[in-house]
Image (cartoon, rainbow, N blue to C red; front, side, top):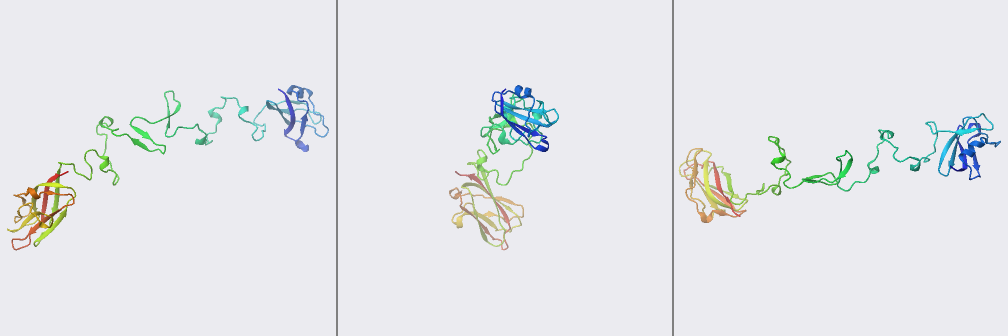
Length: 305
């Protein structure tokens, strides 16, 4: 190990301050420097317990002064807890590969994620079969985005994944379930050929008309009227098309007592198909000399494509 260049006092300088020497003999070895034993500069005398750091071509070593003031004998020292190293003097080249252990890292070191090995976009770290952290991509019935969002695949959950009685009532946020989330039948729709029922209430009173707009095209098959109050003979309700242009049913007698249910005895099929957005008219007639009773009108049919 060849040593040459500056030799600097780095500890316990005494009253003379830090000292430095230059060796011109590039072939000097550490053994030669130690063997000479003395530094005889009259103006740069080493003192007992001074320390010297010698830089060489492949590293450095610290030696300590062990004699009294004057001609100083130096011996090789070890790097101990009391040794003083300059900033940046220990680099990766001075550390033996594979020697840093977990215990060498302070528990509060707070190692940043940026210091870890890069992980592919969208992957996560899991322990593999050998208990080694490994970056993997989520697969099978779900995917994981790089923002942490988990997406279930279509039909990922069926009865095989749910134990008996394991599902408890769920509270869904307002608007969370729309027609696109439900197969076959939409929340805001009625499948073709499915029964379709409309319920309208009338206030009763003198002769009056009540117009009702429907959402879906439908074919009317039945009409019932239920008295919500006592009627008198001659009181009727009749279902008509918009503006009373055509009669869908015959006049339905509502002259009975409260709770009486009366069905239409006649249905004009020519006018029983009502387009989406169309209007039904409930024509109420007071034919008994007193106010017509309040009624509930039930219209039954099928959605028509």
